Image (tube, rainbow over all chains, first blue to last red; front, side):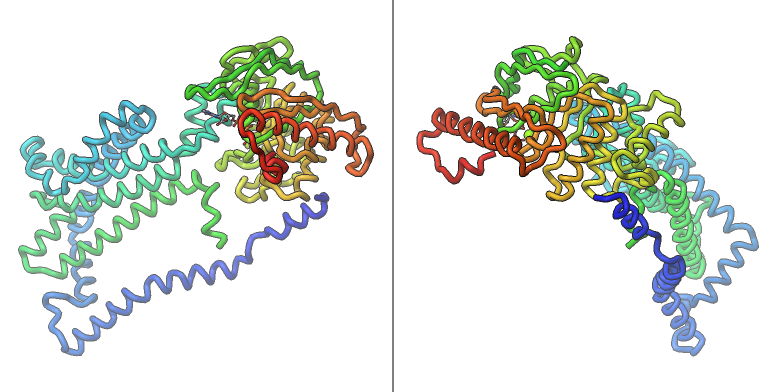
Amino acid sequence: MSEQSLKQEHDNAAPPAPRSSVMRRVSHYALAFALPVLLALGWEYAVRAGWSNGRLMPPPSRILDAFADLAQSGELWTHILATLMRVLAGFALGAVSGAIIGALSGVSDIARRTLDPSLQALRSVPSIAWVPLFLLWLGIFEASKIALIAVGVFFPVYLGVSGAIESIDRKLVEVGRVFRLTPFQMVTRILLPAILPATIIALRAGLGLGFMFVVAAEFMGASEGLGYLLVDGQQMGRPDRILAAIIAFAALGKICDGILVILTRPLLRWQDLARSKL
Amino acid sequence: MLSLNSVSKTYADGTEALRDIRLDIEQGEIVALVGGSGCGKTTLMRLISGLDTASSGTIAVDGDVITAPHPAVGVVFQEPRLLPWLSVADNIGFGLHHLPRAEREASSDAALERVGLAGYGARWPRELSGGQQQRVSIARALVPKPKVLLLDEPFSALDAFTRASLHEHLLTLWAAIRPTVVIVTHDVDEAIRLADRVVVMQPKPGRIFETVSVAAPRPRDPLGLPYEKAKRRVLHALDRSLQTELKVTKPAPQAGEAALWW
Ligand SMILES: Nc1ncnc2c1ncn2[C@@H]1O[C@H](COP(=O)(O)OP(=O)(O)OP(=O)(O)O)[C@@H](O)[C@H]1O
Ligand SMILES: [Mg+2]
């Protein structure tokens, strides 16, 4: 192959024109929002036109009002902050322990054979089943809630990390051996980068479960938090507040996931391209 | 000098992969290993690279006995095995971690140039073709300036054109630092294009059957007489290696199968 043909090949791989990618992104978002926006507008119209009183299913305008009320009184932020703190604390606890035990059972055969069966059995216990036990053990305050969330986060992270370590390509480990890496270098230069993508996916799954478990945690007697807002809305007969809390949950979960993605994106630049170039 | 002294390898399951391999290879010599499937070529390469250890016998590079991967031995695998999370330049500099960054970059740039990939350093391995990746892998093995370079069927996944151009690149790189080269191949033409000596092996247990010296001067003309002669001798040796083997194992060999065996 001549030098020139190589250069040409190089030029052909120029990035696509930016305009078309912007257009594609706009149409991507437009499509994603089309259905919920259409449904919301339809419902708003139906209530205004008097086809329904919207008592059990309030129209978007009333949900927005509930939001505005909660935001103005400062309640909304207290609840969001409380929920966020619990999720973050539980996530940190669950992710760290899941990663450590996952690494252990990924690396050591004995550790896996002793730990994995029990953990798999525990994994199939429904989250709510832990509630009474944690209440007895840890009391009704923060500790029991954070423990419950940590349990939810632990399993996906454990599974993700141990699976990633087990499926490391032995061929790449041999490359490390050929270049005589020390055990420490082997970990930092081969093993960690190799398990990073799967680990990040596991962390995202863990965070998602953290948001599910925080609701269960806040149902078991909290005085603040978005889960409390749900219970409160039900007891007060305020579906608009329930829906406001649900939407806040969705937004909070999405934002946290987005932040995780943005923070980890630089680490995964090497494998990111296939999707963005298609 | 790379010397193999009565090297034998029996795997844990009792497979006798190699028996009593004796071979001395001069510094700068290129040796090709050919032979039927399962005759222990990969096993031998793994022993020389230090990834596995021999059951008996010793392997030494300039008197230094190989027991584990050794800085004087570079390895190119059948697949490029580039690290997907490192840029092409960082992959080439992988074995130069101890050097300061600037020096490492200078060597990998020079190596990229030599394998015809100047300007590709910032790419990800994924963005290269198979042949380009294999060139990067060869550059990665050569950049630490090993005395011995091992290649186990490095071009078998590539088409004939790419393979021919990689032969050129390999010979250019070889000419620059003159390492001892041991290359495993299933392609007799490849063996004769590249090697000073072609070692024909025989399976069950893996042994050296015959060694054919290729006298033709480089660059080799595949239509020239010395090339033809060497090729015929290697093909003949391969054929006989199979026949003697078949006499031992199978009393009634099928001619068509034997010709395609290697
Ligand atoms: N890890 C192993 N454990 C047990 N037996 C093995 C192992 N690796 C190889 N063998 C056996 O050793 C013999 C030699 O194998 P080897 O891979 O060295 O052959 P080869 O010459 O490289 O063959 P090919 O041309 O097909 O690549 C074979 O009989 C093979 O089954
Ligand atoms: Mg092989």
